[in-house]
Amino acid sequence: MALKAIVEKLDDVNEAHRDVYREGTADEGLEGKFVLAVEGAGGYALENVEGLKSALGKERSTRERLERDVVKFKDLDPDKARQALAELEELKALDPSKEADKIANSKVEAAKAQLLEKHKGELTAKEERIGHLSRTVESLLVDQVATTALAEAKGSVKLLLPHVRAHTRVKEMDGKFTVEVVDQEGNARIADAKGTPMAIKDLIAEMKASEEFGRAFDASGQSGSGMTPGGGGKGTSAKKGSFTGSKEDRVAAISSMFPDLAKAG
Image (tube, rainbow, N blue to C red; front, side, top):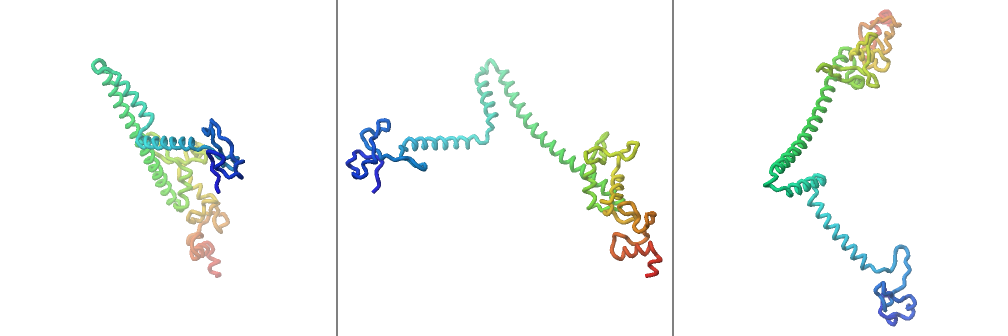
């Protein structure tokens, strides 16, 4: 049988359980009654929850009202709303018959502020558009110049173009755009002691002569280190075939350089 939390008199309680009840107090509003004496543990306790339920109900009502208010004003900017209210109060305080000029000026200033804000947004959008177009033009200009130079040097555009891009930038001078070669720190590179700016052709020639990038160029008798393949460094070049081509091309190149060996074979 479950024990009641509050009883009017102990006679209503089984005699074996009367010791677990205490007298209620006036502060509790339970004077003259008996309350089950329970020691709280693990978050559970015998408490009057009417006040808590009342507070919770009020809190929920307040939250629902605030949520409705937020929905009504969700599209408003608080700062702009405060400014508009302040301007409205200022206008309401004016006497139209005496301060017509001030009212007119206030309307003009409000219209001017709206136009300036609209212009600012349009200007920002236009600047972003110009920046995007400028980057596109610069990319196309670098690609065009680099592709032409790589084709003349018989280099692989697909392999080498990204590396050329990484070492170039577009420079504007006197209203004209030119492609400038730069180092890893972004400083313009110089081609000679006279201070001549390095051109893309010079950059590609440097890459062609390097061990790392030289293999990305078609064979022209020069290896990546500038030595003649199989020629002992004398500068002679193969008249036929290609040392980087198919097996037949390589055989043709060797036969062209060593005709006596080909006859002996």
